[in-house]
Image 1 (cartoon, rainbow, N blue to C red):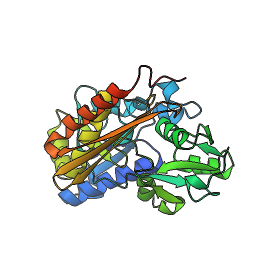
Image 2: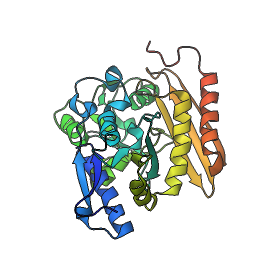
Image 3: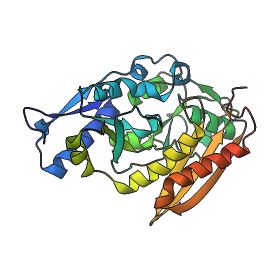
Length: 310
């Protein structure tokens, strides 16, 4: 067990949201094990995705930009666990690491943020909307091809500042992040999944550890949320079969209905000119098989070059 002389080191990115997620993890561990705050140490790790903000993620290498440096330190033993937003996590993990602890999932929906309009439908033709998410860009282009989309990278505070500066009249954030920051009032409204299916694992926090670390395994087992684990398993199996990255617009959401799962998925052309969607229902035991089956079906219906930029 960690003590004052050997605190459990929790690795995280340094953004306000990442820190809020690390603090939540620490708080749950303290409550579950009756440990004081000084039994843990928060270690901030700067990632490539945090340092390079002037280029789209797809040009830099995708989701791993937010995790590689953290995972390197975890493998090296510089930290003991790492706290991640699961929507930022590549589906392939480095050997020797595992994510088998998920915190209770927050609101999965996208937030519409604008000082000028209450809803997407209220935006006038030609309005400039900022987002760094290829999924959101494709979904918006599919539903509102009359809008103009611009790159909008940075943490929550950076993107809100860009709105204030007039770079765009609207943007999107995750309701989960706003809720965790105590900033839910920033959203003009949450967008129903029926109108904009969220990113795979949006709203879910995963805690990564080394496979050969029994202390971390013991501590994390007490705070693992099984319902979130089932939902994320279905969604990430779907994503893995699609070979999803930041270069492919993919949305997916699993919902628990008792002991059964309802999984929805959508793939889009990057320019939003076409979208293919479907769903599956099954038991929680079938979560990963459902995800893979849904992905194969969508891929089978997509014409060659579906994910290519035109």
